[in-house]
Image (cartoon, rainbow, N blue to C red):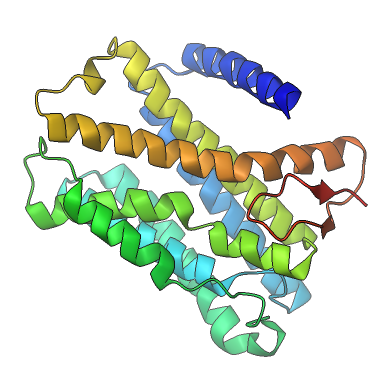
Length: 266
């Protein structure tokens, strides 16, 4: 585990340096947009799976519903601040996710493993809502409701993939198309984290030193949310890449915990 952590940190550092030189704008916004495109590509993979296989086995309806909630919240906030690029991307992701939810709930309901999708939504949504009310950006010149919804989307987005990972743990296997989708989420999350790190680096850390203590706390909470999400997906991505390198499928998961660190490559 120590070796994996060290290698992971080194790879992360080299990738960030490379991304920094590839990005033309120092604020890291292109990386954020790229992460949204990758997220959209992951959903397109799910749509292809549902159309081709006529089954939603291995997919978590609850993760899709949480994702739709997060994207709807961010689309609303981006519309409020007139960020048309992000609004367009969010709308595309939101509509695609709604289609996946519709297929799971109605068209392919007999193939949905409800008993394996066992994580209660309130256990994720309620803490995220409480955090959003307590800790939200206070330096933005927007309505209080908009700031709270924006914060809620960050907190919930960081843990929205947990029901999907829990379902895979309960099933003790990962369906290939689902693995592609989760891997796409992991890559997108890495780019998202990279955009924040580059932005902080380019501002010389001034973004962390905003006037209000509450604002500083908000920035730290956003960074923590991003890193939590990346950490949740990092172990899965590691075993996914390992399985690809050895030309094997990531099929079985032996551990009932949230972490996929004890996954087996068959």
